[in-house]
Image 1: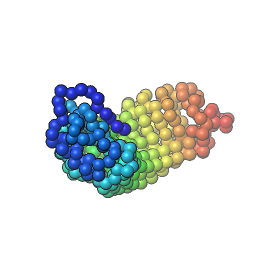
Image 2: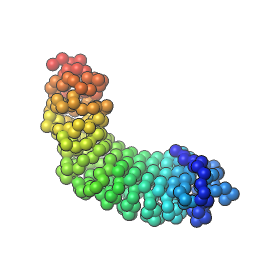
Image 3: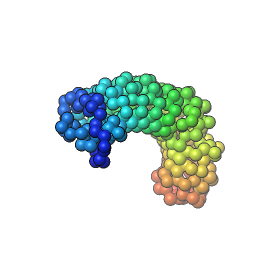
Image 4: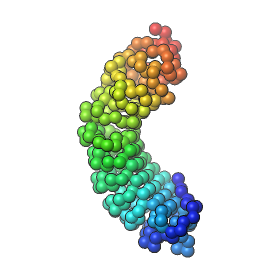
Length: 315
């Protein structure tokens, strides 16, 4: 998405920032996407995808140009007041340059839908003000970065649809002040979930489309404020009868696992908006009440011996 600043400013574009942006434009061979980037106009008021505060560039947004290829330019690190960086839906290759660590005010990182590859660099942990990082739909490999716990303000980490391998790091049991939403869908992750995560109160955790095994019930708890849990398409195996749910649970997908037991009655008390337990080993009567009967029968189908509405099978 492109952001075009049209607000009048009493500050003209900082000359160092302007020069840096023109170097970035040259790095990408002067693409049509950046045709408004001209020394004849002010970068803060006239350049596509640029926003400023007091004459300093604070937002750089380039996206949706498949003709724009190459690496993320090292010059990114010279936009010293940058708070939001978006280079998405392009054809960027290579990895994230080390110069990004110079951006001490960086808050948002959007680099999704590119062809970035290699392990996620550990020097990103030096960016202590980042709250949102989306690296989805790339070709990153290697482990889930355990150093996320060193980013004290991180609220959301998205790395869906890459090729990360290995388990969830043990360090994820030590998130302190800020517990980020974790979106790790459709990677090549495996192993058991560390027991230490049972004391972490995630608002959202999405692990769908991996090869996790063992117990996944540590993401639940009667006192937790969790809103979304998606463990679908893994190999989790635990007794759903014993699970206690927090009152905020709204998006729950446990489909395509090896989960057994009965459906807890407290599911009828939850503000469910999405619910799928199909393709498991569940048994017993589906509790009546709440939102459960509003879901489709296929969202309960292919279990061992579930019965009752919305399934046609009577008990």
